[in-house]
Image (cartoon, rainbow, N blue to C red; front, side, top):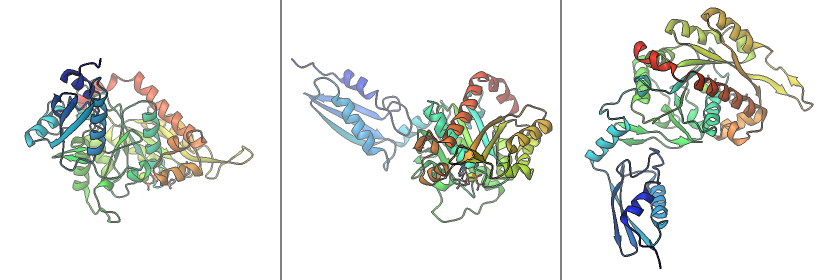
Length: 377
Ligand SMILES: Nc1ncnc2c1ncn2[C@@H]1O[C@H](COP(=O)(O)OP(=O)(O)OP(=O)(O)O)[C@@H](O)[C@H]1O
Ligand SMILES: [Mg+2]
C-alpha cells in the first residue's frame, strides 16, 4: 500500500528548496503561501518576490520536484502568485536582520566578514583578474564570497565573472546575481552597454554606499572590492565606509620598479587601513623547457612589500607570484576565472595559493574585527 502523504510532509520537503537568489529555504522567507492535498494531488501556492522574478522557472521546477519526492504524491499543481507590498517589507526586514532601514551590515557590531580591497597604483596590472580569481577560488573552497566592483568608470567584474543581467529588485533592496558561486555587484549591471559613466565624487560615494547597504549580501565570509587604479575618490570612499577593509596591493615587476605600487599602499597611511600583503602579477612567463622568462623584471613584489613594510611600520608580506599565462587572459575574457576553467594551470595554482593564505589568516584572526569595528565607525 502507498504511504499517505500529509501537508506536513510536503512542507518538510519544500523546506529543502532554496531560493536561488536569496539562498534561504523558501519556507523561511515567506514564499510558500499554502499547501493543500486533493487526494494524491499536491497543490502548492508560491508567492514570488517580484512579478518579473527571473528565477520563476527554476523555483517552479524545484518546488515540483520537492513535492513529488513525498511518498504518495502523484501529481503537483503550483499556483504562482506575487508577494504583497507588506510581505516584501517583512521579507526585506527579515533579510536585514530585523532592521527596517538599509544599513551597511559589514560595519555592524559582531559582523565577521573579512573585507579585502584590491588596489594598485597603476592600471592594467591585474587587479580585476586577481579579484575574480580569489573570489572564485575561495568559493570553490566553500566560503561565502561577495565581490563589489568599485571600479565605477572601468568596471570589468561582470565580464570576468561572466555575470549576466541585473540584480533583482526587491523594492529598495537588490539581490545580487551569483556566478561561480560568487555574489557580484557592479555598476556595469546598471548602465546600458557602451555608455560611459560620467559621475563625480559625491555620486561615486553614494554608489559605493548603496552597493554596500542596499544589496542583500547575506552572511559573507569574505567581501572583495575591486578598486580602480590609483588613490582617487573611490579608494577614499571605501576607506570611509569600510574603515576595517584591508588593502591587498597588486603590482607587476615593472610597476614595482617605477615605484607606483606604493601609492596604493600609501593611502593606507592616510586612512589607517592596513595592508594585508602584495601580489606580484605577471611575474614571469614559463618557457617550453620549463625555464622562466622574467618579461617585466624580477623581485618587484618583494621590493614593494619591503617598501610598504618600512613606510607603514607593519609587516607586509608577498602573498604570491602569479605568472603570465595565456589561459588566465582567455579565461577572463570568457567570463570564467582561470581557477575554474583551468585549475591546474600555473596561474590558477598561484591564485589559489594566495586565496588560501588569506583564508587561513582569516581563521586565525577571526575574532579581531569584533572589537575594532564599532569603535572606528
Ligand atoms: N597573469 C596574467 N597572465 C596573462 N594575462 C593577464 C594576467 N593578469 C591579467 N592579465 C590580463 O591583463 C589585462 C589587464 O588585467 P586586469 O583588467 O585584471 O587589470 P586591472 O589592474 O584590473 O586593470 P584596470 O586598472 O584597467 O582596472 C587583462 O586583459 C587580463 O586578462
Ligand atoms: Mg580592473
